[in-house]
Length: 399
Image 1 (cartoon, rainbow, N blue to C red):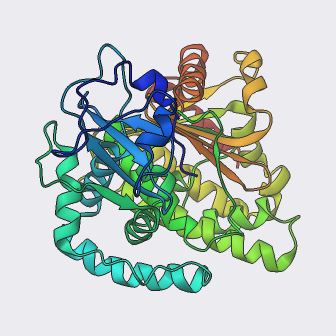
Image 2: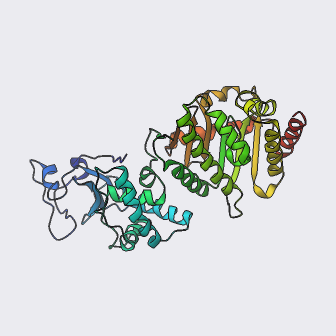
Image 3: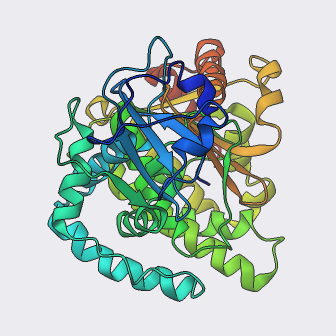
């Protein structure tokens, strides 16, 4: 969803004198209706958020194009907020870097992405938008502190959606969701592309934050053996209708395999920390709950590999285990979900017991989850590698 904070023209324009818009023609605001005078030509919508340059104003026109008009002088003392183009360009550039793509390759991808979107939404016209290397370069000019005069002046919603499809990320991410209070939902049954979206977004946020911190009622896919992971996913979603269960399991297996490959990538730069309740580890050891469907040898092999990973400091993989009574009050936040991930102040996402995934960049939500993980780490008894390794060794002896 594209969100813009709308400002009444009367607040933006304190004076009718001396304001020019984009060229030699003066912008004349009659006394009786300032809004009607400004909203002429192709600009027939209320004024929106302004860019980081104080004398630029973004607008939204009827055909949902986003751009700016440059004023001949700053807007008095009225403080304006950033518009979409700088943040859009910054995030596209970040995706290109993360996926090791050039703007030329992205332009080629956009052709295929437009066809995919047209097949999904035949009622919308995606084929009429040309996204070439030149257009992308002019859009990316907004990623600098001082964009050139030749930077892209406007962009269509459809173009943003095509670029997002080509980069395998949601359009919401490209536009930024930091100021959205409502979390964004991923339904694994809704869109076949969402597995790719999750993988790429997690990679991007990890690189930005330099760390991954997660809690779950189970071991993350990255720390499970592939065989254990596949059996575990089948057991978790055993109560879902068989045809839908197969779809969900396949998607989470794809995400898990990709995450595991990334964890063992020698070029990985972020640290990895997983939080776990002691009772959840005991369920794995005893084969309780969903683990009753997993062979004891598979469970033992998984714990043995986990112990080896933690024993290698160079991998920067940490496991923190807390006794349930140590973090009792903290269970309030985690009662409605089976996993939470947070990347410092950048991003958080969590998964419900039904398999739906929510994600958010909202500062308040991210801060709440980050503080929760910090309290968990501080209160946990098994918060050092030596203690965790000893605990895992004792657990394997009982298997």
